[in-house]
Length: 328
Image (cartoon, rainbow, N blue to C red; front, side, top):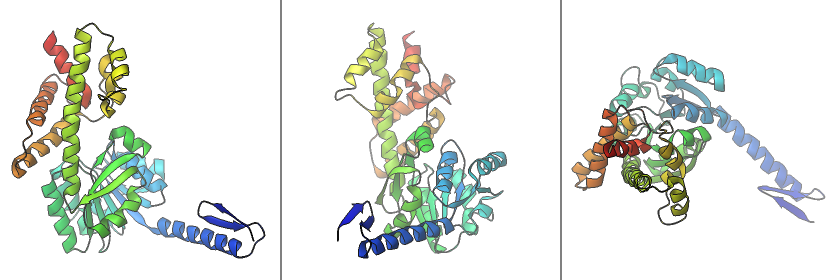
């Protein structure tokens, strides 16, 4: 008997055992899809990141209920993706197997998690709480401990990739939590992520995101100074970047932001206000653990200058505008 192999299926040219194996494989796949369809999810916070992330969750087969502080946005999401909306976090989380949260900061996080209207008031034992907020490792450990007391799994899972990454379902997710909780959470997270890795126990995801932001701050400042230098030297800045991006100077920021930086357009990503919030967390944690972050502290001050220029909602590549202003 000859068999053909295609992916996970094994089929026989003439029936027999191979055909039976293929039938069982197909039946198992259908059963897996039915099992996933039966699972429920909730997504709390429909900002520029959360809105598309929740959409990918619904598309992946999870019956998803959303909550947003502005109810009209939750209703719009439900109409667009075919899910449901609720008027409190607790109502959204009731009966869910997975509850994802993506809000602004530690205080925002506590407001949707704790209290009678918070998700922990209605989450069932054995469910998983996944926090995608970029917050402190302290609040991750705080909420993780409360969740554990209630028999609820917790994973702190901040993301990287920006608005474009969320809209295209290709985020990078760095996670902290127990191995078993992470393994359960990874399947729904994969709906909107291209990379998802456990970094350690609860809080490790947030600490890893701090490393991410520290590195970005330094890279963006260096790129800003490089483009500014090229402009002042009378070089064609685009040609300069085209050639140096093929060598050791290459970075994601260079590849994705140099044209908009040269053009003075700063509406393409993570806002300065949010970056300052994140760098503040980095600097506070650095003090707590004894890490020296002189460059991060300096770039944080530079972002403060950008805010004073009215650039609160500009994206992080707007550091170059500060240099242009100083040079005038």
